[in-house]
Length: 294
Length: 273
Image (cartoon, rainbow over all chains, first blue to last red; front, side):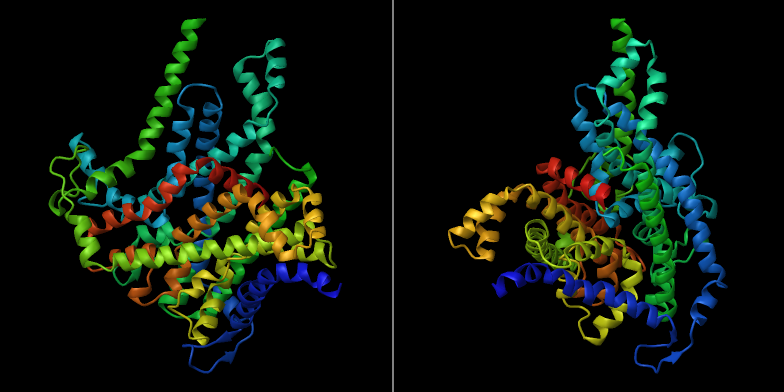
C-alpha cells in the first residue's frame, strides 16, 4: 500500500530533478552571479550588489539593443503576421494543390536557422551575392545588403520573415477552420459581400489568435539570436553592429566573447523579466476573453 | 459568373505561385550552387551546367563535418529517446493518478515553460564548467529532455484512455510500470510520434547551447561547425552550402513523411504553450 502511494512521484521525479538542476537552480544562481564581479571563473569574486544592473541601464549598447528589438518587432511582426493571415485566408479556399502550397510555405520553418542564414548570407553578399548579380543584369545598382547601416535591419527582417511566416500561417489556418461555416452562409443570405464577410466575420473571429501570435512573436523576437549571429558574424566573432545588435547577441558577446559573465547574467535576468511580463499580459488578456479561436 | 470564378482562381494561383517561388528560391539556389565548382559558385544562372560533387567530397573528406554530423545525430536521437520516456511517464502520472500536491506540481511543470534559455545560459555554463562537463555529450542530451511541453501533450493524450483498461490490468496483477509499458505505451504511439518529431527537430536545429557548451572542434554539432567555418578568415563558401543542405536533409525527410503529425503537434504546442 505504501509503495502504491510513491509511484506517481517516482514517475514525475525525472522532470523535477531536471527542473531543480537545470532550470530553477540556474535561475537562482543567475541572480546570485549578477550581484558579483569577477574577470575569470578562477578569479576571486567581489560582491557588488546591484552595480551590474546600474551599469547595464547606463550602457548605451544595451539600451540600444532594446530599441533595436523594438524597431525590429514594430516592422517584422506586422509584416510577418500580415503575410501569414493573407496566405491563410487564401489557403482556406478549397482548390486543387492547396496542400502543396502549405508544404512549401512550411519548409523554411523546419530548416535549421543556421542553414537558412547561410543561404541568405550568400544570396545577399556584397560583391559576389546572387541578388546583386541579378540587379546588375537588369541594370540596377547593387546594394551592400549586409554592410550598409541602412539596410542591415531590412535584410534581417527579410530573412526572419521568410523563416517564420509559415509557422504563423499554420496557426491561422487552424483558427480559420474552426470558424463555423454557417456564419458565412447566413451572411450570404443577408446579402453581405465577400469583403464584408472578411471584415465583419473572419477578422473579428481571428482577433484572439492574432493577439496570441503577436505575443509569441514578441517573445520570440526579444530572444532573436541565430539569424543576426550567422548573418553578421566574421572571423574573430560576431560583429557588434549597433543597427542589428539584439539583446541576445549582446548577451552572448558579453558573456562568451569578452567573458564578463556577471554582466551577461544580469542581462539574462532583465530579458526574462521582460518575457515574463509579456507572458503574464497574455494570460490576463486571454483569461478575460475566455480562451481563443483554437 | 462562371468566368469570373475562373478568373479569380487564376489570380489566386498566380499570387500563391509567386510567393511559393520566393519561398523555395533560396533552397533551389542552394541545391544547384552546392553542385557548382568554387569558381562559378555565385553564378546567377538558375540552370546547372557542369555539375560536380567536389564540394561534398571536400566537406565529407577534408573537414570535420562527418564528426559534427555524428555528434548532432547522437545528441538528437538520445535526447529524443529520453524525452519520450520521461514525458510519457510523467504524463501518465499526471493523467491517471491522484496524489497530494498534483495540481501545484503540474502548475510548476507548465510555468517552467516560461523560463527563457537566456536567463539560465550563464549559470549553466558556470555550473558545467565547475563539473568539468563542458564538451561532453550528456550536457546537451539530458537537460530539457523531461520537457514541460511533452509532459503536457502526453497528459492530454493519456487522459483520453479509458481508466477501465488500467484497472483491469491491475486486477490481472500488472505492476504500475508494467501497465505503463504494456497498456499505455502501445495506445499513445501516434502522440509519441508527434512529440518525437518536434523534440528531434528542436534538438537538431538548436544553436546557442552547443555554441556555448561545445568548445572543442571535435564536439561541435552541425550548426556550430558550420558557423565555425563561416568564422574563418576566408570562409569556404562551397563547403558551407553543401553542409547547410546536408543539415536540412534529416529533418526534411522526417517532415515530408510525417507532415500532419508535426504540424498538429507544433500548433498544439504553440497554442497551449
